[in-house]
Image (cartoon, helix red, strand yellow):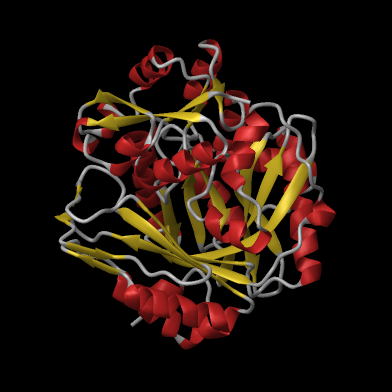
Length: 436
């Protein structure tokens, strides 16, 4: 097992990883930007190294400085969390080149699954259902031909990156050129890769993902599914596990497909296979996230498996000590992402408590939320024996949560939970567009 791990991230996920390491008896090294010198993750770790300026490009994306910090502090491994460098194949390879264990899959696997066009082709070969679409498009003329074959409406999608960038919906031929050009330009700017392909636009659909743990001995275990259909601007807002739309037979089939995907990719560590589920219960591979997910806590709640600790163990060469038959989903867990809608300073801060209530955050009273990074400032998670009780518990917890001084989306989350479609579990990815 590792004796010291550097956490190449910030905010709540850095705090989450530090906690796991402390419980495992592993020393920790935090990194911070100039803007985060007073951040709580910087003080919770055993050591902290400032790796650059306020901009992410100068600090949390500064590979050379992060690797130097790991060497300087004699860390043996780097945990990238999510976002930033977590799905950067060059960084994963650089860790290996510097004799540092990257807590995640290999750079080769990240590269293979990060190229969404190549990933789709790999899934087809493995027998995993995929959305009808095109290969990588060379130019606008090819896009027009493929669009006629696929049929409208469709999506132009970047092959690289994530977070909803480089995606455009096209409802007819007159919209194709603008969508093709803008999606490619946005992808080039965000990911340094302007390659795009097209998929049939399916609607209404649900966004369902399957959590995997894969060790280096070839053992693969699914930790159930999560529903992630509540999205705003292609960003998840609220998640629940398990999905209210997935029955035992469908769950079994989705898990079998997820295992096929993992084996085809020669995947190791924690990963997530994301599917689209249509009204007829047909599911299609969308992508594979080769990292820890923001919403991993709800899976931990319903399985009683600490995913972060298993990430660390797997990277250290430890085999899974449980099988698929040991995984029993218990009850329902929900997670509300608490996002700042503008920067601000926390004037008053109160966190809800009680049985099976968890708030993952890096806030404290007097902390100033910087404008330079992601807007998420916390994750409120609850667990109950059934879905209706989980909804009530979440509403009660949201009503207790106070973050004065920082504008946030707590009221919006309450509106979602009280909506008849959410209560019935019949919502889909278009839900937020209908929310009034």
